[in-house]
Image (cartoon, rainbow, N blue to C red):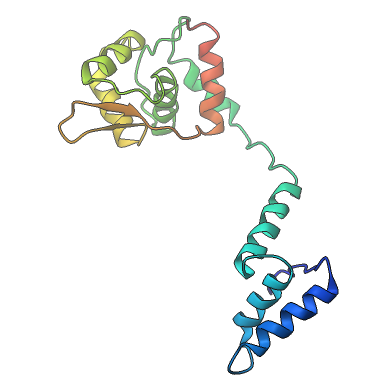
Length: 179
């Protein structure tokens, strides 16, 4: 079932004149889509799509905010143990879910909207990696879509996207001691 789309015209006389003029200009009786467009124009919209878009935007503004996603605090606590008190990654977790959270945390420390060389990315990762495999971290960040690089590998860039709730919680937890 389609959702009802409210329709209102500020002046019924102007509405009638517009409807009459537009219907007379047609060679035959208007079809469903033509009638929707005629009604929308009579109400002051460019077409039916414009009327619907404005209604949809209003619905989004009136909708209650989405609840915060639930955070798996146990996963965050267990993953935080891989970081030292200074916020550096001491070892690489065996669980993929924890690896991803670690990568998000390291991603947060790479500057946004900045072109970096492979060396600059590696140096940043080395500063936060105590287990000595910055190349693994760099490759996994690319595979996970957190970093992009040009075909020739000269330019790296952080991909801007919202981190999952657990990643945000881990970032807050390990950044309290990270400078």
